[in-house]
Length: 181
Image (cartoon, rainbow, N blue to C red; front, side, top):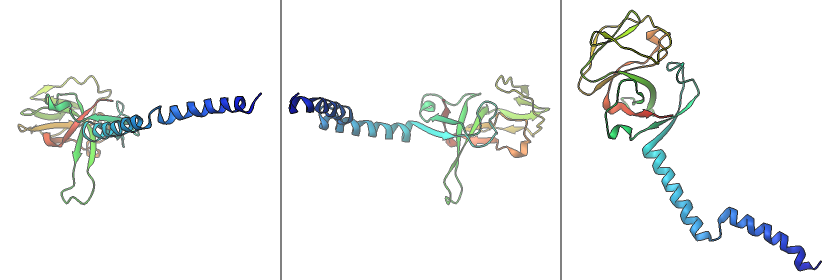
């Protein structure tokens, strides 16, 4: 075996390794990497918002610590619907802290009246059918009239005390998007 034959397998392996890591044409690979980076930046800054659930207010449907994605563009074509799980952005008035995003379910639409009576959600005086609810709650609240740009949101875990929940009327501008995953 000659010295040249002994080095050819290494050259083949190194050549393959080079092709896998930087491609046959490094300039093309660099352009592809930049395009992919910009595309990922656009998608995750303007379209999809990854979030992690913290707390039990959306259980049993969304578990504490679970990762989800909010689609920010879904409501560009149509308005939020009853039953949608959405991200609600809460921004402190003084701007000193970063905003917090809550996952909540929309149960009341603009112009409706919403109340909890004997563990049931009442929309315009009628009991709301909620197939996603596993257990009945014991909440009782006053009737709330929603304005033209208001939605009523609440968590799915209503076995907790109503005083341990963030729920109620939110403006359409605070809805970031719909949870898609």
